[in-house]
Amino acid sequence: MSAQNMGWSYNVVDYDSEKAMHHKDQGKITFNEGKKALEFLNHQNIRHTPYLQKDPRMCICLPTWLELLDEKPAVLFTYRHPLEVALSLKHREENFTLEHGLRLWIIYNMRALQNSVDLCRVFTTNEAVFKDPMLELQRIKNELTEKCGVLRPPTWVITDKVVDEFVDPKLQHNSKVRKAEEEKRSMLKDFGRGCVAREFESDYPEASVNRKAEVELYIMAMSVYCDLENGTAYVPDYEWPDLAQWHRPTKIN
Image (cartoon, rainbow, N blue to C red; front, side, top):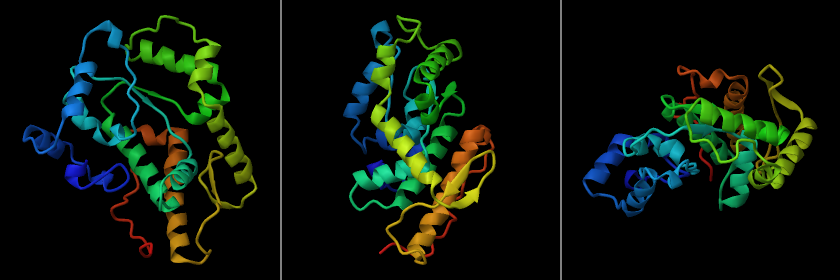
């Protein structure tokens, strides 16, 4: 990414897979850690399979890695509410705005679905996992093995211990708190089928241009979120927001 003047949080929408492969082949980037990863990922030893690779940057870089892997992987796609993600980034990263987090939420989900369209995919959501962890994890496991041909686990029936290790109760609690607080706020836009965007706390004055930009991007992100919820966003010709053509009212100071 750095060779293309980008990082996980900036300019990622312009990532060029062909350019990345060219940089690798020309030795313009170091690939020492990548070689170690490929030694593991392309190893046919049964002890290495099935593997789980979890890195949000793979949403962006997947096309590059697909050219380097001996076998196509299965994909487990999941997503969280955009405001939860944006707030988490704002609290975790220095000088990170909600607007920045919302933009990244759109880009990462967009690229994840666009870049994995030819792979075997299983879809879930954080809400589905929190609602009934045992049932949802069992469904995910069944689809990965029966639909995508992932190696069956040693124990076919998922145990309570596995569920407890997989599901973070803190995230579950945070989701419930956000939902409870959200219900108290006025509606910004109703997208139908019970999916709505509501007012949210901001660091900017209500009539400021920064607040306006924040709300516009939130509405944009919620439109995608609601389409993920109703399944519309999974069709190959889904029309994603054109962030390149979206002109912010003004730059953040």
